[in-house]
Image (cartoon, rainbow, N blue to C red; front, side, top):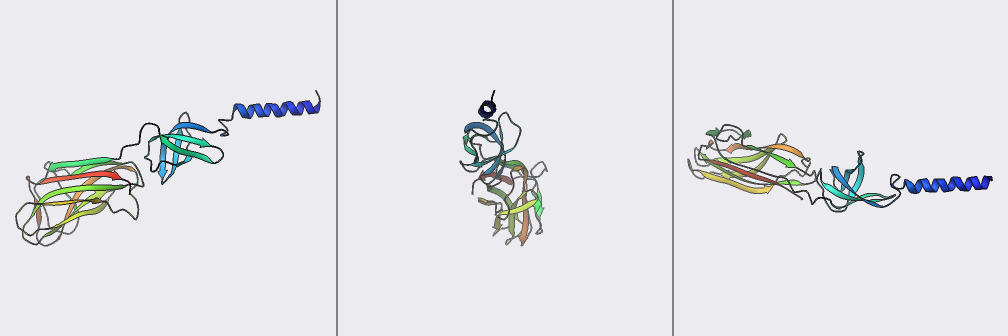
Length: 228
């Protein structure tokens, strides 16, 4: 065999080896199922089915949730792109609380947890699936003031931070009134990360007389995840 024949055979063998391993060498386009492991905007870290390594990808279908099942298009050499959901889009997180209150009073400006009838905190577990999302809420709190002119704040505590969600001016004494408010948690400076949180209903007296609840007072709040 001449040197030329040997060189040709070596080249052919190399080409055949590359062809046989094109997929593992990321040399071919391909559509693969995967699971989202982490999210930062449209940049995500995924784990392809059958693999254990984290692979960076760009989402072309908007904000994703951690754990979402997706289809990934691998386009060498530019990278991997999320092009669809493999098991339907992940549902947004939601949670609620609805119980009667304990007999309790608030007469200072520091936030404290509101208590349900059993004496435990008025709290629920909320799973936030996306870092880039925000938390919307609706609260309904029944309370009464000892004297006319009291002002109360209602808050939700998430991850050790109290967020004021509604306030109320009592223009009657010893009369049950509902403090209500819908809105979105103002966390624009630093988004609350994805994760599982205990969300606690809190209150404080801003000014005026003492505010109170009794066993006829209802404590309710609803939380859900929104893309904002």
